[in-house]
Image (cartoon, rainbow, N blue to C red; front, side, top):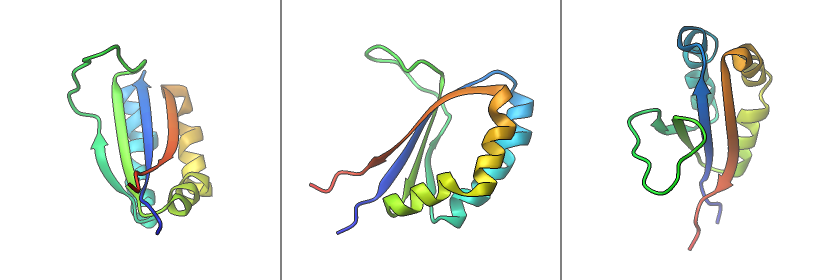
Length: 100
């Protein structure tokens, strides 16, 4: 059985307007192309025990690891990452869901 896979990103946005125009305005269509769904996309967070290094958290659910890796490696996605790089700092991981 294939478990769902998640992309977790922790982002510091240094220029919100340019981040929006270079990344946010384009990433949704690519997530959808690979059957992904945003579960968390920013929003208010409360640090309970320590904290993430950056304020913005993103969680995207994909139906499989293959979908997540194909999304990440898509040439169009890599181009928007390159375009957004001057305006952000981020950590991004792909992690398999619990199969219990």
